[in-house]
Length: 193
Image (cartoon, rainbow, N blue to C red; front, side, top):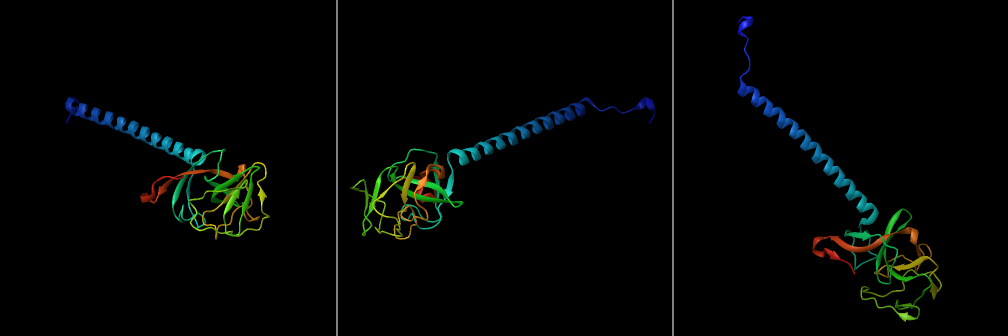
């Protein structure tokens, strides 16, 4: 083959190669866009789960029958709590889950049979299946200190909570949030009361 007889690619081959290069460019852009979107969504999900709606797993039996060991719940950040709500709070690098009984300034009294009185009125507790005084070493009646919350587990005979001076009342800085929703197991999926 001489220099005058050089072989040039056909126009169809050039067009095919051009299409292939355009496709590679579009594919790379699409892949970059998808990866960026996934990272952004994951970051937002982590922020939401950490800052506004922490997801927690139940360990132990102090909240039975309301919450069982191994269940997964969602909490929401809140600063306003009322009697009967379930909250999560930090205690010694652990997250504990208990029910709000009384707030700042209220008086709590627990009888020998386990019935609870707040400001002299009996507390209606349909979520408790077995009343018990439990591990109580505080002097009753007890006034909840300022900016604190008195909490108790639903399984009164085994729960260590505000009735014991080791845990005591929960301060606002310790609170993770209010437990509002159960996501696991699926057969119990739904809002918590």
